[in-house]
Length: 81
Image (cartoon, rainbow, N blue to C red; front, top):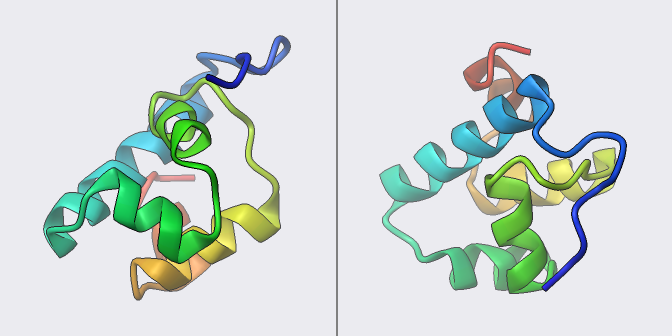
């Protein structure tokens, strides 16, 4: 299990991003494991992202958005960021 990002864990923006990712994933009806695989991200890291424990880089956010078949801008809009 990845260690939470010490400076950013539980930041409201990261929680909002994680919730938006989870909601989009559920709408697409895919498991967290499948989203992680399609995004080329470790499943435990994906779990931490969805819980707002990690501060993913822009490349990771864009890979997740592509796997969800939405744009990065749409994903951020869903998170109201």
